Image 1 (cartoon, rainbow, N blue to C red):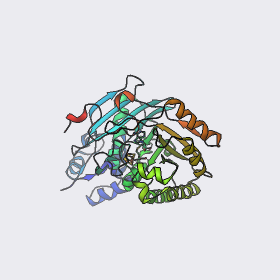
Image 2 (cartoon, helix red, strand yellow):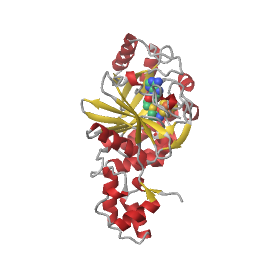
Image 3 (cartoon, rainbow, N blue to C red):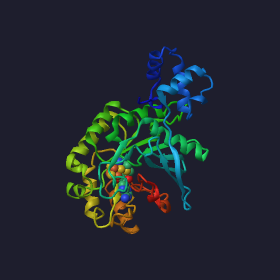
Image 4 (cartoon, rainbow, N blue to C red):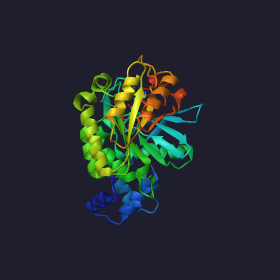
Amino acid sequence: MNKTDIKSMTIAEIEELLSSMGEPRFRAVQIFDWLQSGVESFDEMTNISKKLRESLKETCYIATVKIARRFESKIDGTVKYLFELCDGEYIESVFMKYEHGYTVCISTQVGCRMGCSFCASGLLGLSRNLTASEMLSQIMVASRDNGVRISNVVMMGMGEPLDNFENSIRFLQLVSYEKGLSIGLRHISLSTSGVVSGIEKLKEYNLPITLSISLHAPNDKIRDSMMKVNKKWNIDALLKACREYQKVTTRRISFEYALIEGVNDSEQCADELAKRLKGIMCHINLIPANPVKENTFRKPDKNKILKFQKLLISKGLNATVRRTLGADIEASCGQLRRKGGIDGADLQ
Ligand code: SAH
Ligand code: SF4
């Protein structure tokens, strides 16, 4: 029998579960509190009767992630985790210290099927989606391991969150619970490679999260060469969806632009980009491309990056260059893997 993933359930769902077991519904809140506080076994639920704990053990499981490896950056204290999941799969997550608090970059899938040419996460394709409980657990374990409260989350690790829509939404519903992680939606960013159908669905929820769009190119010719998803939804379709999303949510959209030498870093690209984003209330995050050993692309030199940024600013756009964190432990954007970077190949 497949056991139920109780840590992904809402209070109402746990109530239903209890009533189907002939147990009182009011226990649901207690169980939910325990799960969201990060317990890893039913026996830790000390205000629940032993009998009920035993019945729960028979039908349900509590999802956890185990630290398989931990890499700490000597440069900036960033910590990258290789987590082992209950079924033996692996994912990576990153813990970062910012001036405004602690942030965890979580994975949303084991691998990714979007196949962007510059990214390590998709190299082995998609193995499976992560559950909401596995997304929560990455934050819980990173918080416990570092002994701090996490105040911000970015859904920018391995995987495409909008290709795992239901679980990502469920995660967003659970993460702000005040007796649990208590992370407000305003402190969460969801990054997508441009899954337009997902952006349209997300719009209906009208959440105060920050939507980040991995744009990376000012025209379809360049974007087609970098991202397969552009063949399905081109830049016009993507930006139309962004405009409509903004109309409903009134939230500023963040555009990510990974600068790759000789590919998308020319003055003409900056010019074209500024024109295309006209009328969208947005912020542009320039990311100097991070190395992926299977690839040969490089980031432009510092001056070229600053010139690109200046050009965007001169056109009235709000553009910043993202600080690279965890460069010595392969913990930067697009470097997360299913088996762990840095000598991770021995993990089979
Ligand atoms: N799948 C989602 C979220 C995870 S990727 C998405 O693509 O948006 C997080 C960010 O890292 C994305 O903007 C992605 O395009 C970027 N990225 C991927 N590989 C990179 C690389 N080698 N250098 C810099 N950024 C990269
Ligand atoms: Fe997947 Fe995002 Fe990497 Fe593209 S950039 S392969 S969508 S994780």
